[in-house]
Image 1 (cartoon, rainbow, N blue to C red):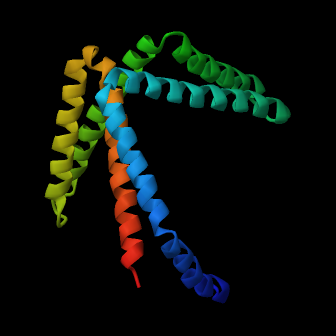
Image 2: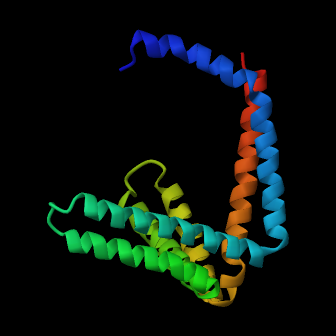
Amino acid sequence: MTNAYQTSALPGAFADLRARWGWFVVLGIVFIVLGAIAISNLLVATIATVYYVGALMTIAGVMQIIQSFRVKTWGGFLLWLLSGVLYAAAGLMTFINPLLASFVFTLMLALLTLSSGMLRLWLGFQARAEHGWGWIIASGVVTTVAGLIFLLGWPINSLWLLGLLLSLDLAFQGCALVGLGLRLRTAG
């Protein structure tokens, strides 16, 4: 439920966004350029992706270790602590051996994509009585095929697949930001 303050604040917030439409366009262009740079050297982009994930895992592990000491009185303190130590250690290992981490991340991506596609196929066939169930099946087929391609290309694709996904993500986010900025410019 919205209150009077939220309703009256929306036009002001929209006007503020509309006044800064150019920044969305500039940010979008920066993302597109970064995506183009990433796609020009997929190995470097893959390593950057591995380091990024490793840094996040290390930070999350350290935070979990700290949190385990803050909630010592809870049951399972040692499990919380061990989980944080293992998570931080896995993150640090990505910096020690980024190539191995790339192999592991790519294999996980392939298996999870394949599993997701198969689950969508199953859900689609379960929903045959519903309107639009074919779209779920189509999504499942595409995702399953992508997972199989990822899996069949492993471990060679570990050198470039994560970098390709990063570059595509940057490019698509950039296009979305440019589109948002241009839409804000013309919005009334």
